[in-house]
Amino acid sequence: MDIQFFEDFERTEYSDFIHGVIGRSLIIATRFDRSCNELAMAIEYKQGFIEAKTTDDFDNFVDKVFSKYRSLNNSIELLKLPNDICTTLDNARKARNEIAHSLCKGLDGCADLRTNESQFIKEVSKLIEDVTCGDIVISQLTHIFNKDLIHINDGFVKKYQEDILNWVMEQ
Image (tube, rainbow, N blue to C red; front, side):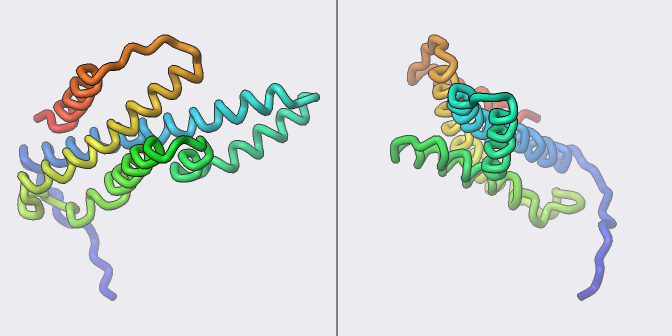
């Protein structure tokens, strides 16, 4: 196996656009991941706080909980939600993983020669749509957990998804 160093440092307006889309996609994907982990841990911490008899008990409990939530999949599974909600979150998890682990494959160097713009935009749009659906579910669940009032309707959801997609695809 030959070692090949990164040698293509050319930047163009198009490659900067592609790299910007990737970066903004990662921000949205990371937000979803973090929100799932935080909600799952908050639910468990609340229960542990109620059951802990001493500070040491609670500290040990916190360490145990923190070690459980090392992956997005664990966080989603530990929320113990109905199947239809789990499906939405699992689709968002898969999209997040695609963004985080596969979206950049083959894009080292100048993206002008390595991407089909319409295909790339279509692929990223679908991934972002799935992640935002999961983000909306987790946001709603977090509002419920916090006992906040939420006023989310289909119009809000559609606009939220459009706003995020427009931001990700911004030139």
